[in-house]
Length: 316
Image (cartoon, rainbow, N blue to C red; front, side, top):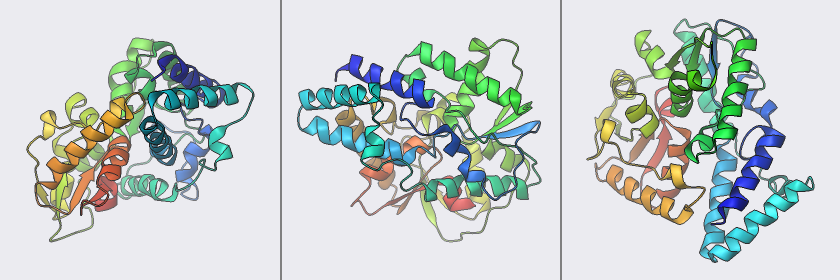
């Protein structure tokens, strides 16, 4: 892949929209519409805008795969063409109707989490124009973009009055818990993942007796944040039987997400292998708690007789 063209494309989208795929920042807070969530408070629910970006992530990665199958020259030409179109103000995603399509399911996941927290007695605010968490810039080593994004997130949280942040996706948890202080001085935030809060508050999910699931531990959640038992505790409280794959917990398998934008075909092969591992438990359901894992494992599970669900869709 022409990495220079990809870098240029990501930088252009970051400059115009504040995220790698050009999603309108104002749409990241749509999950809270009608819930009466305040925009200022000492505790803020921060989603990182990743669930909201799933339709664009899926469409972009599918397009990369199709272009790569035609040859690396075609893929490189398409990326350079997209960057050229952006440079003159033409958004190819808008032109082919990708923006905003298919978001209902993912906004529903975020709303379910918010309602579960509220039902557990947790008061929280949100950021209407929520900034992206910057994880792709970090994973690709684009430090200048990541630093700018981290500072942007810190500014928005400060404007909202946050002293404590409840995160939804594990990338945001890691970024705020371990990386924020490296890039922004004087920030003192308590950062917790929503599963930690629900377990601590004694949340009782709806009962789903008789269901068996295979649990995929996202690397950012289990390996880097050390959050292994919380999803299992919530599944147990729901009466769901857990089947563990061979590679789980801190030794979990990869979903292929980290290399998706550079090596789409290899990313698919890794995700297929992980689906096979999870399917080998004999369960018809694979449960994840990461938007990137959800996209990759769901794509490669088509026709495999298993359904991939987010943890919030199972419990809440």
